[in-house]
Image 1: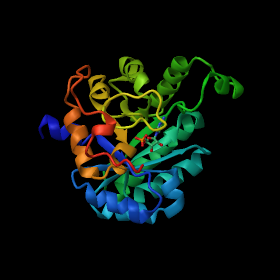
Image 2 (image 1 turned 135 degrees about the horizontal axis):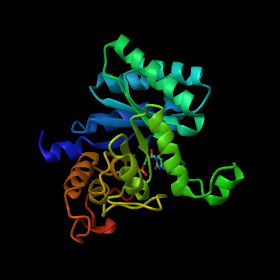
Image 3 (image 1 turned 45 degrees about the horizontal axis):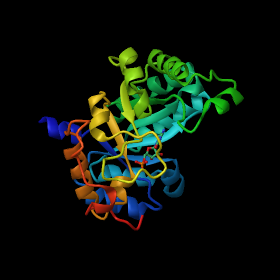
Image 4 (image 1 turned 90 degrees about the horizontal axis):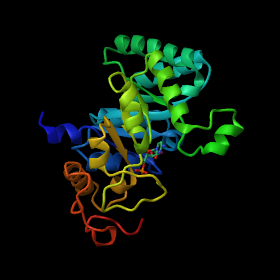
Length: 261
Ligand code: C5P
């Protein structure tokens, strides 16, 4: 596997669509993509059979439901997800160490039973939508870096494989837990794409430079007039020097961006 394939293989496409039909159409348009993320909205709309359909197309599934419940319920749900072919999934660190540890233990057991590799267990530390005041309101330490590190530590001791974090937190976590935790990063925008509602963004090359393990990218790919071209451009851009100014066109000039979205 050359370097280019390895970066392409680490870009996860978020299937934030309104229907299964639309989602499967995007999967079929992107034969070069290995991993697709299914989130709470699409899962609630279409149910777990969608996972089977994606799996049957030969793709890996990242099920991003940010599970948070009593340990037994989460462990059983993780088992079910694995039976549907999920290979990456998210749990909320605020569910506590026992919840995460049980999920990891039972998930590995279920994967062995299904004769498939164990999934990557990813921890959500703080939702990026929570600001200092909201953290105080729920009785949490309002220092976001401290809280992110504390919860990353908890995830690591519970046996989790990685964390989902904002681009700004990559270095913080990598410096402290880089050897033990994989880092999955949304909030990524190629230079030519619109920011949408993402505020603190980073380009693919910046995020890889900071040693993110996986990037999650949705709208710049799934809303492009050609998702396949958009993905290819992102892979190419991911090799540009993070500070170079010639990595892409401006959004309005870019031929591959669909302006209807
Ligand atoms: O379309 P876009 O590239 O912004 O999609 C990013 C994906 O990552 C979405 O599925 C979104 O829910 C998810 N996400 C995020 N920010 C977080 C956590 C998850 O954008 N802090």
